[in-house]
Image (tube, rainbow, N blue to C red; front, side):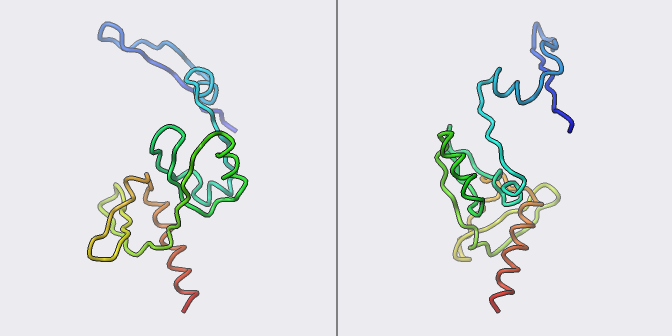
Length: 139
């Protein structure tokens, strides 16, 4: 497995100067910047566990459906998560190749949430497919 590396540049007298080279990315996050990296299994990643909106430090809005142990792991690290059900999805529009919007609401006053949640096109497509499959199975 390839390890991601960091090169760091600083602006000095109008010129960017490399101040760090080939630093392990996780070490950079944890040791240099003081972040805590919380592991997520492939299954939790596939269940949209990494798609969330950070409201403030240690406070997120996230898509429900991940494994309970993932929720517990976040809580153990002091993350206050609100798990949201996306079963109310009803409308998607694509705007060029840049993004798609998900709209929630009563149809007269839909509210776009894709940008706020950082959902990219592939994620939106999977969510919509999942919701459509649920609807097909109900009929």
